[in-house]
Length: 448
Image 1 (cartoon, rainbow, N blue to C red):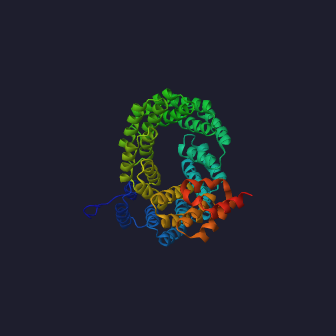
Image 2: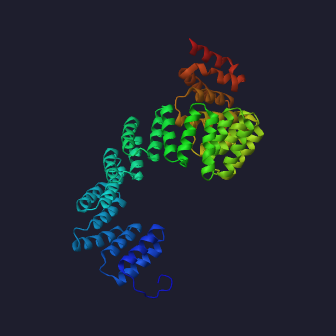
Image 3: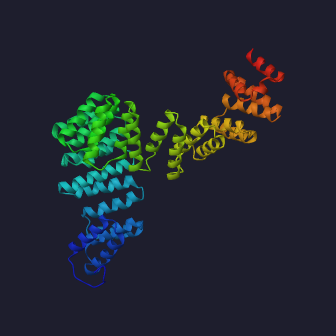
């Protein structure tokens, strides 16, 4: 019918199944067409009209949805689905308190356990939107009372505990849950993560082992167990667990990267770099992989290779601030000052406003003889780091270099008042300036 516009008769329930299918797979245009055809054949069907309101919500037509729901409410005042859709409309407009109140009405009308469980979950989600984590926990726990294996509710409860930094309470809750459902790999996995957060690595390890006993194909448990073993410096065992994940499922860049790091810790450089290569091959967009390779060669003082790989990374993602910072540092080590300066400027342009970034760029501009640009750079830095001795000493030296004595004296006095221990900056960057008698006098007076 949808393809040919020919008219065939379907029961309203069949239309509902068709519409639900299209909504599930995200084919909204087909769902809309199916709703229209359904309502043409069954103009009084409440369920089809509820699907119509769902489509209105997806299109942000909240007034149309509200109007239709009010009409349906007059006809069927005790239909819980109408209140659920009303709550959906309110939620999409960020009226979460009103959505909760509407769902509570639906809850009074609900009769079967499955429907009640779904409503508890919806209320819990609305409380999450309101950042009311204690209330959210209450309703997600009610979901588990109805269905002990509602893992979505279980994850949401742990999310609440995590957000509130209540790790001990989360551990207590999970242990009580495991008393009722002792072979739940999800709960053991979450328990292990909580122990890991509070640095109790032995208990974390035991929890992940129980998760694996409950389901020996649970990739997440092997990954987390590998992380714990790394913390305990048991790198060989960590590698074994990460390798199990590679055998169980498609290789993940995370596991490949961690194997690389473990080999590096064991001093097995050839194997380490092999796995770093595999990481970026598996996921070229994972910045941690490129950073690992670059830092590996950096540490080995093989700056040419480090530069080669950071350039490859920048070609893939030119907006990654960490890449540009590494690019600047490596070029600086290679004494490619123009490229280093470009790297630091790009780092700043991308929002990395660390003091050291400003200072490194300044020092390179000084080395390049770009004194005015260095002054402008420091003035910008001073907006983020006012009254900073490292900035003031550099400004003093630059103004003296540019024969702007009054400005030079002003910044030198400021610098000495802030922290005279940074005097060495003048000695390192402006040795000729330091020889001037007038400057020596200012420094001597400040020391008294």
